[in-house]
Image (cartoon, rainbow, N blue to C red; front, side, top):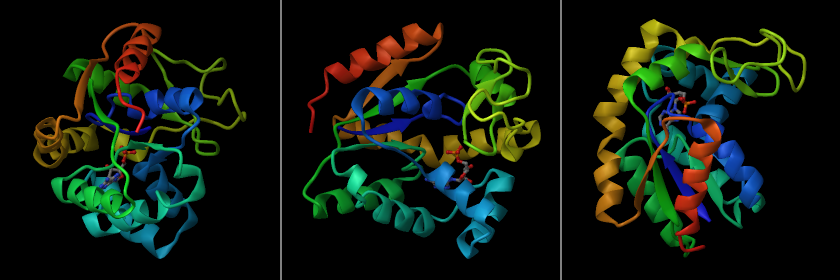
Length: 218
Ligand code: AMP
């Protein structure tokens, strides 16, 4: 399956992707994670991306398109993939379409994660991540066993710099301006499925899996 998860920052794309990885055995491809890895490694790409990321702006299309072009051709992506955080603009979506066409493959579906603004803000401000293994927690809803410590590797959890309140509003505004037009873009192609993602975690996951059951396994 080739799935795009579309939704505001904080909607839960990363968390839900991790569950889809377990169920379908296909990789999660997150441009945000790839860019953060480049920032951490101090590469030229990372240094360029960091300037945009810390302000909550989008990294230029050309940069993320090249990252994705290489990543989807890797071996583990041959069976399918979950795109988390890409595409984020119409030009990115158009480039993806061309890439997939040239590989003679298509998208299975685009899942639009629907949550209200209060939930987004709670998920963003409460998110804590492990700088070592990337595991994600929430101080209200997905607490680690020991406060502030990663369950998986024991490292101290941090707040992403772009999850601070001053950056969050900008990220949400950028989403409305640049990413929300993708809803119509994929709706017109008959690929969009909206999933209501408010409420208890297991129920939300059941709704997501239910929605994917109806998708052709292309
Ligand atoms: P995320 O982890 O998906 O919330 O992404 C964190 C940040 O990385 C975003 O606020 C952007 O600065 C950058 N980023 C991630 N994915 C993209 C993308 N597809 N296009 C442009 N910038 C991106």
